[in-house]
Image 1: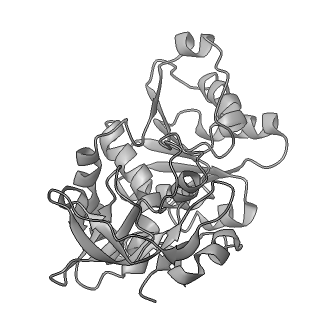
Image 2: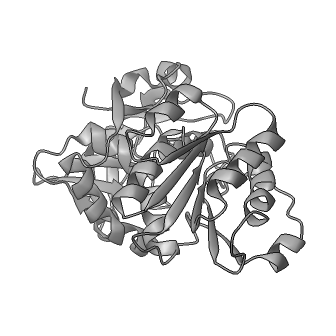
Length: 320
């Protein structure tokens, strides 16, 4: 088969011949219709993701929409030990697959499921989120953050504070459900102060930044809370601003702060997959907005480094 193949962590994948994977157990070999080029895929392909084992060559891709031998279409998440999905064919494990509703666009599903899944699963599985609570999305101007704003409102958030650096994209989030906007541009201390003023009393933080913005934001929010004993669930999902923070010990004693992660390992694969049918239904119905651009898999090397319009996700289509 033809596939995107990584032979060096220092070079983008190349389109070349690769051995077709052999199904084992309940796995099914499917024709790939669309596979999203997510940040998670990029970090796996350059060896920087925390699940990387350093083995090469590899086929990137963590999920896809595929066509089964009987013609049915399904969205699926690749097994951890299976080749990736950026290929003509890939292995589908029925335990990690969800049928596509009639009329669902495979390119839109492939583009949106990964970024949408992060906040959808976090709010439905990692915390006891209830309608009427309020949410801060830290890093709201990225693709996943934009989806998180929509999902928080869809799940019943009474307030959604959206914080991000991209001023142009930040302004668009009001139409997607944000009730307050906070820019993270400029002086970091001043940005943290703005966050504290706007979001001190939120119930949940969905954090895609970590690093310096989070390090400053945690004390800024906690020291301004009306009731410090009220629980604040801080869900760490991404680390676009840095992998580490320094957390003063006093904030853990002086407020009811609960920090947790949401991702591979903090949730079972079965738990994640159980949430996918409802999310796919919302995407198919157009409840959640997602922008995608399809690119033929044969152009993967060029697409890997080409600039992408903000807010749009690349989807590789082997059958294009």
